[in-house]
Amino acid sequence: MTIRIRVAIADDQELVRTGLRMILEGEGDLEVVGEAKDGAEAVALAQRETPDVVLMDVRMPGLDGIQATRAILANSSSGPTRILMLTTFDEDEYVYQALRAGASGFLLKDAPGEDLVAAVRQVHRGVEGLLAPSITRRLVERFSRQRPLTASTLSQLSELTPREREVLVQVARALSNAEIAEALNVSETTVKTHVARVLMKLGVRDRVQAVVLAYEAGLVKPTAAS
Figure 1 (cartoon, rainbow, N blue to C red):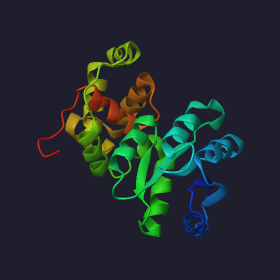
Figure 2: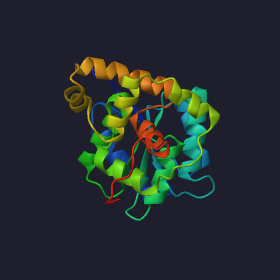
Figure 3: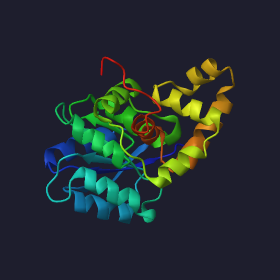
Figure 4: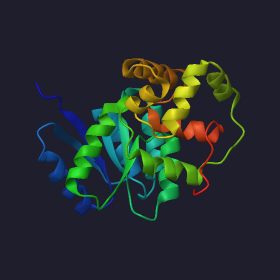
């Protein structure tokens, strides 16, 4: 039986929402459960419908996409909802703030329909998905700044074993589980176990937030070209 991915759309432009709905509803495994025209409506929709994925515009009137992302992910009733940000080419800093807030990935609004569908499926996979890893890494490198970490984050980092910390660094370098397994000479199953434990110990939802934390903690240094 096909697993249906329940998707909510949040964008202040009706034409954009209609276009996204048409693309998504053409796929047998995707179901649009509602639309919102601003951040406040998006939060209410997420609480009511508990979608698997929310397509979230960055800039909306009132409560913007970043604030809405924080509110949705802070609400336990939203369950395993993941956020996929919709952005334009000039909103990199907003996207970085959204990733810090807990978004699982981002996509340009003018991306082809097949890319949108693939992104929704990949974000829904959660721990196994890191949307456009090289792009995500460059964006994080560009905007991350080493900052004093909270006592809670320092405590979480200290709980990582040396091997788990090594895996975190490799994740932050945008390596896949298979690539990490080859680099560390272990099985891919072992890497998956390490990644799951890293996410649990750090209290983050998926690999994207782990990458952000690794850079901000200084475990990985931005490349010279960034």
